[in-house]
Image (cartoon, rainbow, N blue to C red; front, side, top):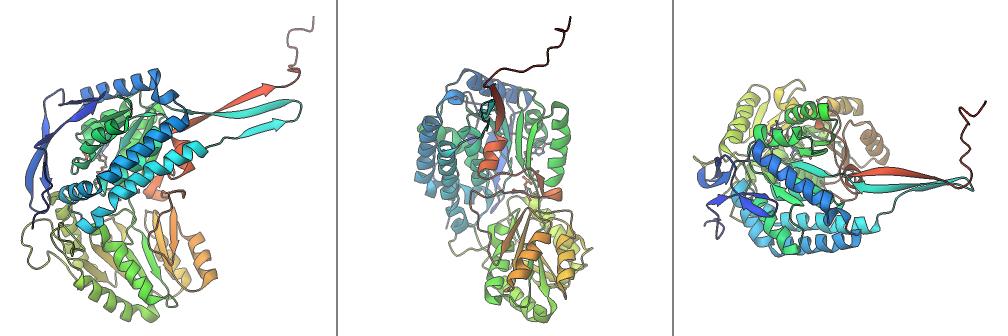
Length: 497
Ligand code: NDP
């Protein structure tokens, strides 16, 4: 069985002002297939000089139009075409994502549809968009003139890369901005599809520009560029902090979607079958490489022994396999360096908790970046595997007795992205949810996302919200226009003599 997509390129390039180009320096970097560690292509490695050219092209497109000046309806039509093209490439995209990131093929399959949906959603939203007007009868009217801002810098991580890129691209261009996208270096293959998709849909040249290259070079140059007033970043919390520092002297608009160590809290009165399905899925789906993973499971003591036994049984039965096999539930981690990081945490965990499942490579996989779904129980709240984001198929489970204790445990990390609460008590569910320090809470629910809702975290999990109108707010400026309807009534300074 091979998942090698047909017509894999040997080399991919930057895309600036409607042209595919190599880096000005001629530098490249290697891209590997994580399942085999084989280097299968090179990518142009852009740096400051290339970023300068991409930003100049994006700024020219923004200043001269037509995109930034089009009617929302006209832009909406092109966004729907983008969605059509993305959908038509569903199969190809799933193969590419699975190949480049190690994601199981069945889980890669929905990503193109989700990406297309992001474009449809903002295509519809900008047409329905209305803005405030405030009237003081007979005296004045205020109205909001909403405008795109300019060049947006979009910096994205390697987990479900194409979908995450669409999440930023769709609202940024829907609102009339131009963009420079800098995707993660581990997974640039699917990003290389965007130029063709945008060209086919009729997006004017210069509106979308793609810079491949290192975070510390190309990403850094984008963050520090004076003609890029907006940076939308998804990635690690420490990188987010660095970007925040680097963007501060230029007072840029920042949206930071960062890491997480989200709790799944299971009370004894929960529907335990549903809770088990959801908590297992939450931490092991997408290879555990998921910012909203429920990577800490807090379980009420009355059901603890039974729950952890069943949880561990399920973890042991999870099918770890080659990403292309439709039976695979956990595939290959994205890169050997990330694999090493996850394995280090597993070794740390062996001194911090009781290992009930996994704990290293799965049987039959001496090579590649495969990790057996790993369950540690009786983990103390000060343990590193309780506190730090591992971003792999590793879970820390801890018992609690009371609601107060559960809340204290849930809030006891620097992160605050998502939380999942399982209980059949309505009042407890809501009160508990309100007290949790997280940007999002799912009650008796798997991670289901309605595109209208705010997405983002508190504490070290991020700054700002995207999703629905919040994305429109981020990528636009709201200018207030005030009109006086009768005399201006200004105090007559200097008219006294
Ligand atoms: P990183 O922070 O390492 O990288 C993210 C992106 O930033 C990459 O494109 C990277 O480039 C770039 N980058 C790195 N350093 C800089 C810099 N100094 N200036 C500008 N850009 C830079 O994160 P990962 O790619 O490792 O992604 C995993 C992280 O993303 C996890 O912590 C996860 O929780 C988080 N995440 C958060 C989500 C959320 O919505 N809250 C969603 C998904 C993931 P390069 O790849 O070349 O290093």
